[in-house]
Amino acid sequence: MVKKVAVLVRDRQHEALRMSVGLTLEDNAVSVFVMDKKLPSDENTDLNVETLGDMDAKMFSNNPENKFEQMTTEEIARALTEYDAVIPY
Image 1: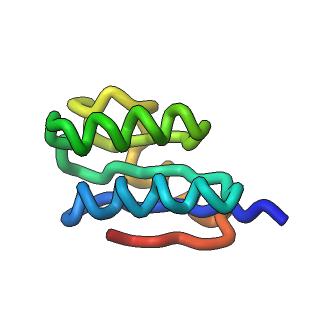
Image 2: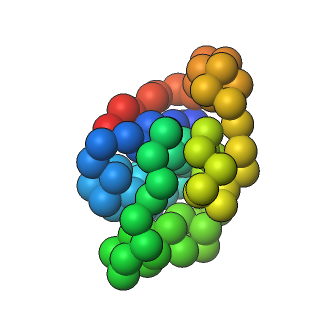
């Protein structure tokens, strides 16, 4: 059975993205919510974001500097109720 998993990315951005990629290997429906801060543009981050896209993970942010689908913090909070698991980082 496919589980819906949300990952909240805050402080440990690299680790959260790496772990999000790993979650896709079990056929989970993964959504990544980048909260507040802009993701750094470096080799590891770019590779993980690209891989998440290749694995059909959805990416959202409440910061317009991140070029993902935009949601307000309130919209994200409401959306999290639809997930089987929410993992904060």
